[in-house]
Structures are given as structure tokens and as C-alpha cells.
Amino acid sequence: MNFLYEPGFDPGAPVLGEKELQHLKVLRVQPDEKICITDGRGHLHTSKIIKWEKNRPIIQVEQTVFVDRKKPELHLAVGILQSSERMEWMVEKCTELGVHTISFMITHRCERTKINLSRLESSAVSAMKQSRQAWLPDITGHVKFEDILKTTTASKFIACTEKRNMDHLLNKLNAGHNSLILVGPEGDFTTDELEAAQKNGFGSVGLGGNVLRAETAAISVAHLFQIRQLSNGVSI
Amino acid sequence: MNFLYEPGFDPGAPVLGEKELQHLKVLRVQPDEKICITDGRGHLHTSKIIKWEKNRPIIQVEQTVFVDRKKPELHLAVGILQSSERMEWMVEKCTELGVHTISFMITHRCERTKINLSRLESSAVSAMKQSRQAWLPDITGHVKFEDILKTTTASKFIACTEKRNMDHLLNKLNAGHNSLILVGPEGDFTTDELEAAQKNGFGSVGLGGNVLRAETAAISVAHLFQIRQLSNGVSI
Image (cartoon, rainbow over all chains, first blue to last red; front, side, top):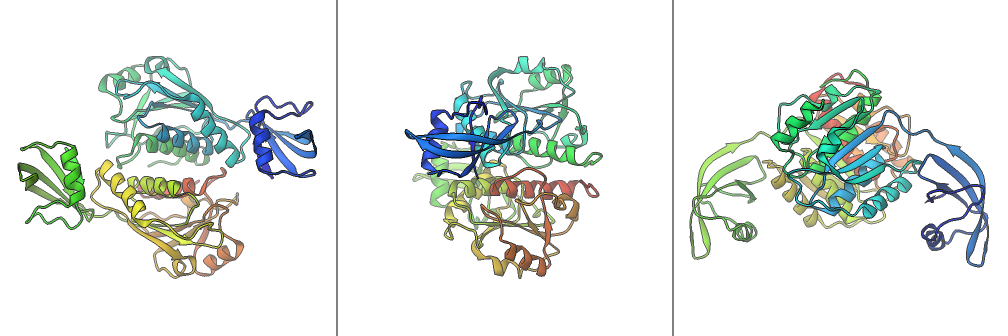
């Protein structure tokens, strides 16, 4: 069954926007074929193409299911990376792993401060469709490091990818806690940034002995958060 | 300090091949500057450029350190994917995470059966240099699924990315055991392949509730293997 994304989709007036309409045409979906439409906000509408009329499909929604958003929530804030491609890849993988919010921060060592948010959102959409999820992560861009520090949430950590022998994130995470975890850009955070985070209640954590690229560190964080929810009491 | 890769580098006759020589020129490394040269087989040669002579550097090796290869060994065998880019990315991440051997298998659902091994090796080289490791993973391509099944190693698993409610890999892995873990291509393994693997002593395992792309599954496996070595006795 083909999986489509239509933000704001209304099952009472089931119409697709131009993008998914084109997609449906490319897929050559025939009358009577089933499709699944999500709005990226928890709804999965199993639908049928009744017929094509004037090059547009007449859609009938047969069943609507609401999927609760995954709890607890992980908010991952990552320094803006040099490579757009690596950020897009990171968004794709974090979407697959069910990250709730992804923020791109401007930190001292960021080599660039501008990102193309709509391309990153496209990566999230395609990953959501690929992994047949009902929720799209929230993505925010160009967030100042100082502003992220003011965020209120149950657990807050800053990952130090360059330092070894730190407490491992998995030991510090609490199952069931919403968490905000910061990952630096290439070259990591500065000492000043680390200190500012600590002053604002962020625990410093490591991710194990390997030197990881920033985007690999981000996906490790998302994976560790998922493992912690599955396995309370695990320690390293 | 710049990090170079020179296979078969001999500290007694320290000469660089054309590739790293060009790299050194681009980097404009000056006399007296230090560089680190690895052969990808455990040796790290901290060296100095004495001078440039006829457009070639005269290198003096000051210190050689041998780094043991990480134990236990993870052999990750993945179905050949449709996209070369996704395979290159996977090799990069698995190198960062210290995977010992990466094999690309031909399985029933592989959409292609040819890979460009030298491009995959380049991805591994650049990841090894980036994360300043002394070992390059062994990469083998075009391995038949039937042949992989005959491999002898301490622990053998087959990851079923499409099936939920399977025993989680982390519960099955034993710390300290060399392991061979199979990950299917897009569309996963066939039932026949799963059965053949089970008959050959492979345990079937899952990777959690999310639907993961094949290359994300592969990196999850590498990450879980690393976590298991750090945390014996952990279960999900």
C-alpha cells in the first residue's frame, strides 16, 4: 500500500495537494487501489481511489486511526554542520528512530549559520513515509545556543564528543523522562559553552571511546535514548 | 597534526604514494611540521617533514606506536543495497564505530549484485583518517548468502528488520564474543533465507519497534555491539 503525506488532510473532504497528486500519478495508482495518507500529526487514513476524474483522484477514506506520539520525547539540538548533505542524512536517521524535535543551533565553532530548513523537512517527510510513521519530527533551525540553554525539560545533557572518559549518556538517561540533548558541530563545543550549559543544569556526558563525526554522535544519541526507554536500569 | 594513510608504509624507508603526496601538497605541510601516518594495520608513525626536495618530502619517523585491533570482532554482512551512496555512508559510520569486517552479500531480494568496492574502501579510508584510527575495516564484496552461512565464529545472528516482537539483539549478544551479524537488503531476507540461517546456527533477532532502512539497521547493529562490550549484563 502506498504511503502519502498530506499536511492538514481532512478525511471529510479528502483532497491531495499538488505534490502528492503528482506522486500518485507517477505511481499509476488505479481505481480500487488502497493508499494510506498521514498528516504527520498522528492520523493514518486508509483510503481508496474510487476513480480518476479530470486527471484528479476521487478519494474515499475507509478508516482513520490516531497513533499517539511516542513518549517520552527526545529533543535533539545539534550545531549547524558544514555539509547540508550530512544534516539531511542526520534528519532522515533521527526520523526513523522517532526523535520528537530536532533543532539546529548556532554555536561558536559552527562554520556556517544558515541552513535550508525546507530541504531538511523534505528529508524528514521522506523518512517518515519510508518507515510508515504517523508523526513528523518538529524541526527548528538557526536557534542560538544561548536560547537553547533556557529550555525547560525533565532531563538536559550536553554530549562532549571530543572528550573521553566521561560518564556515558546511557548511564545518565532516565527512562520515561523527556530529554533535551545537545551535540556540538565539527570541532565540538568550546569550554565556555560547556560551562554555560553546566550552569544551566545540563549534565556533561560522553558517547563511548570512539571519535565520532557530529552527525554520527547525533544518531548515537537518538539510538541510546531509544535503548534506554526499552531497557530501564541498564548501565555501562 | 595531519593524519595520512599509506598502506604498507615502512618507517625504515619512509616514502608516501602519489595519493597522500598530493594530499600533503594541498595541505601545504611545511618543513618541521609533524604528521601522523598509519598503515591501517595498527601502526601510527608520528613523523616530521625534514624538507622538500625536488617536490617530494623527506620524512623522518620519530615514533611508532602499535595499537591492538579492537576485540571482540564484529563481522557485519549486509545485503547489497540499491544506492551506492547509502552503502558508502554505511561503511563510513561502521568504520567510525570500529567494525572489524564488512561484507556485502548477494541475497534473493537484492536489486543489484554489483558494487564498486574501491569506492567503499575510499569511504572507509576517509572515515579512519577522520576518526584517527589505526585500523581499516576489512571489506569484502559480492559474497553469496549461502557462503556467509558457512562462516565459523563464536556468535551468529540474523537481524529481521521487518518483523516486530523479536528478541532484541542486545539481549542475545554476549560481551567478549566475536560475532557475525547479517542484515538484509531493502525488503529484508526471504523466509527461506531466514530458515537457512537458523539451520546454520544463526539466532533471529530484532532491533526494536521502529521500521529502519537497511543501512540504519546496519549502523544500529554496530552501535549495539559496541554498547554490549561496554555493558555486560544489560538487557532490554
